[in-house]
Image (spheres, rainbow, N blue to C red):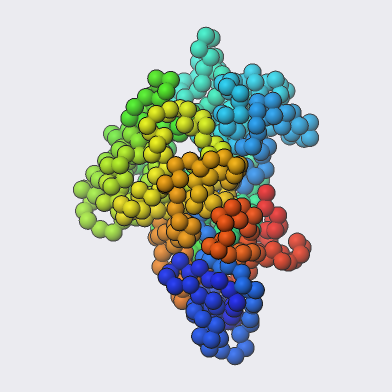
Length: 557
C-alpha cells in the first residue's frame, strides 16, 4: 500500500464546493478531503502527519498558457519590463555589456511607454551597445528590437523581403531596416538564429530555471502554447533525467507556422497528431496545435475591425482561406486547437473557422480555445460560449501599468470593453486564467490580484481599469485551477482538492480570502506538492530544498 500522509489544521480551498480543514494523500493522489476526524479515520494508523498551522491550501495553479523554455530564457536576460525611460533602458544595456564578455546582449520585456515617445530604432541601441549584437524581446514577444550589429548578423538589409504574416521595420526615407522585426519576422528569423547559437546544455538549464521558479510560486502544471522541436527535445531530456517524470506537469500545443502552400500547413497538423498519440501521460502530453491568427495591439499588428488611431490597419497572420483547412484537419484529428486572437476581427476569423470545422466534422465533444481575446465584440462573446470554446485570458495583460501604449493605439470605444472577463462567465463560457509568461510575470498571486481588482500588480497606486470586469477572488482561483485544468482536458484528475485527484497543491502563508486583496502581492507559497511529493519547501534551508535537477527551487527570480 502506498504511504499515507495526513494534513491537518488548514483552510482548504478545494475548488470543488465546500471548504475543508484536513485531507489525506496516499501515493500520488488525494484519498480523503473533509474535516479532521474523517481525515484521521481515513488515514489510519501509521500515517505521517503534517500540521499546516492554519495556512491556506489550494489546488496547484495550472498556468493554462505559458512558454516554459522561453520563460527560463527570459529569466536569464536583461530585465526591461520596469525600465522607466529610454535612458534607463540604455543604461541597463551598457551595464550588462560591461559585466559580460558574452557575444550578444539579450534583453526581455521592454515597453513602448518607456521610450519617451520615440520610435524604437537600431540607432537608439547602437548608442548603448555598438560593438556586438543586441536582441530585445518586446514585452508581448511579438516583436524584437535589434541594433545594427544584430541586423548584420541576421543578414537583414533594405532588400530583405518580409515573411508571410510579418514585417521588417524600415526607415521611411532610406528604406533600410530600422531595427524592428514584427511578428513572423521575429518568429521565423530571430528565434531560429538565436536557437542555433544555444546548446542543449543551455536549453536544459533554461528549462530547469522555469521549473524551479514555477514550483516556488505554487504552479504544478503548465500548458506550453508554442511547442517547437527545441522545446520538445528539452522536455524529453528532462524526463530522461528523472525516469519519466518532470518537476511539473506539462501539456503542449505544437506551434503551426503559416506557409504559402496548404500542404505544408497540413503537414504540421499531421506531425502534431503523431506527437499527440505518442506523448500522452500525466507528465508530458501533446494536446493539440497553436495558431497565431493575428498580432498584438501595442505594435498595431492585431487584426481590428476599425483602424488604429494613426489610421493604420493590420491584416491577420492567418486569413480565413489559409486558416480554415488547418482548423478542419486538426479538429478531425481530435486535436485541441488554440487560436491566438487579440483583435476583434481576429476572433471573427477564429470562430468562423471553428464553426466550419464543426459543420464538416459533425457533433462531438470538443475542447478548443481562443487565447487572449483582449478586444472582442459582445456578439462574439455569446458566439464563443455557444460553441463551447474556452476563453483563455491573462489578467496580467490588463495591468494598468502596461496599458498606456495599448490604450493610445486604440483611443476609442474599444478601450471601454477591454479584457471583459466577466462577460464570458456571464455568457456561460469556461474562463481559464494564465500568465502567458514571459510576456508577463509568471507568479500566479499577482495575476490573481489583477483579476480581482483590475488594479496594477506592478504599481498598486494606479487607478483600477474598468473595475466592473473584476472577478471575485474565489472565482479567480477556480479559473486558475479547476477551469485551467478543464482547458487542457485534465479536469478529471487535476485542478481540485478531491478524493481520487492527483495530489498537486500549494500552501500559502495566509488566507487571501480573509484579507485585503493587496495581501496577494506579499503572500507567498510555503509548500508546493506535486503528485504527493514535496517539490518546494520554503521552510527548508536552501541546500535542503527539493531542486529541479540542480536548479535551486527556492530562489525565484
